[in-house]
Image 1: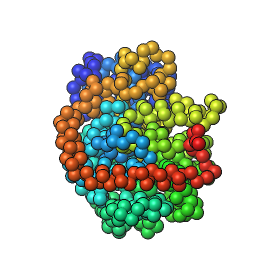
Image 2: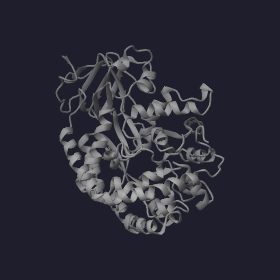
Image 3: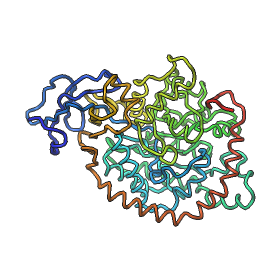
Length: 508
């Protein structure tokens, strides 16, 4: 008996076959009807009239388009309650605002924020994410575990990497501290990060003592920005990565301020410095990579490393636009990310995929250099899976891949009429059509409703936490507004330093 997804009860480990859905992934992009047989947490076969065991649950896929879940290559779960918090923020102003936006968090707040982040992604077709989670004034094993528990409760996969540094913003950006009046120089001293040895001990404990289902949770290392980490700290993190095999993700060449700062401090690019430090490797991911040079891309490609581009965030913060076509030509694995909701305001991978293709078109008039819809979607699925450390297990609808699937309603306004499945998936779809979401063979969203957590109850907890934090971070907010004119003046001036790499569009 074939039933609808809405009516189907939990299969309780029984095989499941989805009959007659329109199936689409980066390799099979014409949108042909097929059956998908799922056994356990994986896809057993895909094809017309697939044979299924006699005890299989049969589900009607007619009128539904099925695509692999997105793998978000870069997000920040701690930012979920900061969407829309600022307007004309540069990256450096956003960092100045961190004690205001992220301070005074309880352990419950950490869980709430990560759960909101995961829930939004799940409802918008994303089934895995690389989360660089920040705790202030310093990170803890308990706090990271709370963030991971939130992802587990929602039901999506996560590569969790706590953000770490031992050099504060005002010392990391050359000349910034000196650009502040004396009273503000003293005030920002209260936000200096702890000594690297203290932070490293926590990271080491997290890496070596945490036990999670590796099919759903990976631990990774995140030296947040190279210039925010001392050489001793980076060396210790490199050794830990060598010992444990953990992946590494760091914000690299996100803004021109970072590019210029690295040139002044290291007399080289950030990538060249990190490569010299032994950080660049196959399971290393560059977050953003806006200001990468050809030499940088060559180094990354040779190492088999990845870049997670975040074009929505890059435009929001005025950082310029990454040259994805150039990365692909060099052979770099490219993923797509949303960034955190403080710097892109949502967790919509459909939007991020669309923008990844669109921004390639402002680099020149030759259509041959523009990213196709298929290339953008491949980066947002297969490229992300590899960057997260799940290799080719995610991002495909094929035998052996995990059953992480998104079901779109083809009666949605986005699909009336259908002209080209891949183009409309990459360019037209915005999450409005998401009807069901499956992770590891289990439906976590049915009929647009989360099945795993009470979203309304989570929302009430978030509102209460947000109100309390607003009252407890007034001093940090007031300090931000005192610092804003100085940082907003100094950093753009630093970014005006001439450099051969150009990633601004229409720069004056």
